[in-house]
Amino acid sequence: MATHEELHQKVLTLPREPGVYIMKNRHGQVIYVGKAKALKNRVSQYFQNEAKHTPKTRKMVENIDNFDIIVCGSEFEALVLENQMIKKYKPKYNILLKDDKGYPFIRVATDQPYPVFSVVSRPKNDTARYLGPYAGRGAAFQAIDTVSRALGLRDCRRVLPRDIGKTRPCLNAQLGRCCAPCAGEIAQEEYAQRVAQAIGVLEGNYEQLVKQLEQEMYQAAEEERFEQAAQIRDRMRAIQRAGQHQMVVASGFSDMDIIAFVQGETKGCIVVLHYLAGDFHDKEYIMLDGTWAEDGAELLEGYIKQYYSMRGVVPGLVLISEEIEAMETVEAFLRSIAGKKVTLTVPQRGRRRELMQMAKKNASEEIARSETSSQRRQKSLELFGNMMGLEQTPVSFEAYDISNLAGTNTVGSMVVFENGQPKRSRYRRFRIESVANGQDDYQAMEEMLTRRMQRWKDGDEKFSELPSVFMIDGGLGHVHVAKAVLDRFGCDTPVFGMVKDDRHRTRGLVAPDGREFSIATTPAVFALVGRMQEEVHRFAITYQRSLRQADAVRSELDQIPGIGAKRRTALLKKFKSIKRIRQADMEELKTVLPHSAAASVYQYFRSGSKEAEK
Image (cartoon, rainbow, N blue to C red; front, side, top):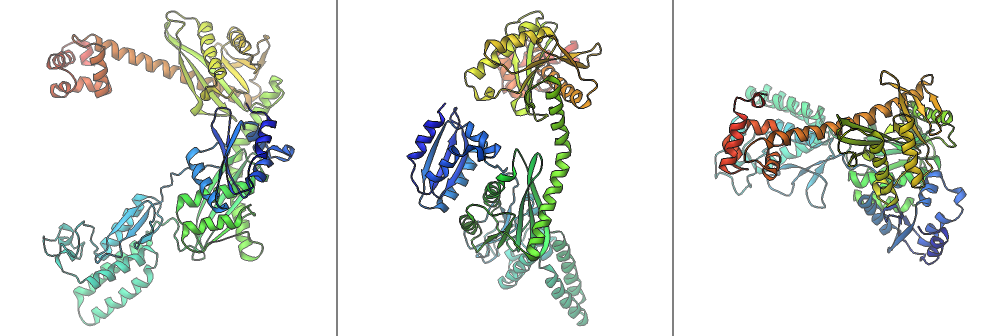
């Protein structure tokens, strides 16, 4: 790994120009991406005055082994490139938003003589009209269907006016759901008027249209055109329903968004309040772990760039809770997304400041709800550390267990807990090879831990992080085995055994020196250890059962004449399970096997054997 001095010398060679810097760890992984107005000045800050860094920045700097730069023509270009690279690399120390909201838009091809409505993921720079975004594709399609039925708009794929009069009107026209422009039953100007009315409904301006139709209805009734009056009444009611059931999340016509960051005791929260036409419309928020109050400006900037680039819609005014480093550049970035003027500002007084205080209050309330459980977990970790005499409060645990069935299919499991919660993405399982037959938990535990530590020593990224504490499901003998393996790899991480009572319940913890710690009188620690022990046991049993079931499937298929390893694999690949193979007919089996082999399988499962009756 590069030394601090080597990195500092590399910084001295950087230009004082705008650009993007990419921090990497010793495995070559990108851990942070940032932009700078002057690369040399910005990057040098990471390697000087480290005492002033926040804990998050200090931890990131400790993991920097190398960095690259990309020089850009302007700070704006650097910002755009930074945003693209964050999406590409998903660095550990950047704020990351999941691009899974799926805010679709309704597209109206207004440049066509008989416009059609469609659903698209993002607006394009064309002549079409875009409405939304909507809460989901289902909501967008429902909105189109509602206004189309209310106004008799077409949903066919016929090209008009080219296809007018060439075919009979579709079923929708016969049911009265479409005004049948394909048959020439409505003038182009009148159809365009209906499309304009539909757009008005989708934009939320349906009340004016309803009043207009109401007047037309009364006029028709006075003139004794009762059938026409009834038709207008039905359309008016349909439009009322369409307008009242709109599910727009937030639109390009919104007045402003208010974005606030608040730091709690253990985590932070960013809240976004959306205002449409001066009225509150919606709230979104994201909880952030491992943040500090000093990170607020950086977190806000990162969030704003990712949030609006994903969302594709920016209001004309965005209020933020504190000044960010590149206000003008970020504002220009938002204008490039919105295609119009966007103002980014920190409110200082009046109504806007009151609204910002309300946003902060919402963020604080979300933190309070979230930290109730997180504070309990933190307290459990502190109590565990104090009880075990650890120098620092443990943050992560790795728990291990062995499982087998009558000495066969011996497996090992490793589960990870971080901050008192399961980290399932880091779970690992092992098929034990050194214990082919019989039961030897000590040998199996030694093999599993040796393989885990060897992967760590070899730099395998899946095993690169060592826990604060190793937890072994077993007594003193298991702990001695684990301690010997850790010593062999020069690892001094504490290790404890999770001891069970006669009823197979967690009783306490045992240290390598034989000391046993009772945890029954400390409910928080008892619950934490018990949960780890149950989870590692469950994970081991699940894996062991899956192997046993696979063996059972192979065993049953191996009994069929003419079915070897290749044909067995082909059957399982096609049908996925014994049950589906048993239910398959000859024609289905022959798509995988030759006729004779297919007949053997078919006859086997339809014989009078007990296996076939199951």
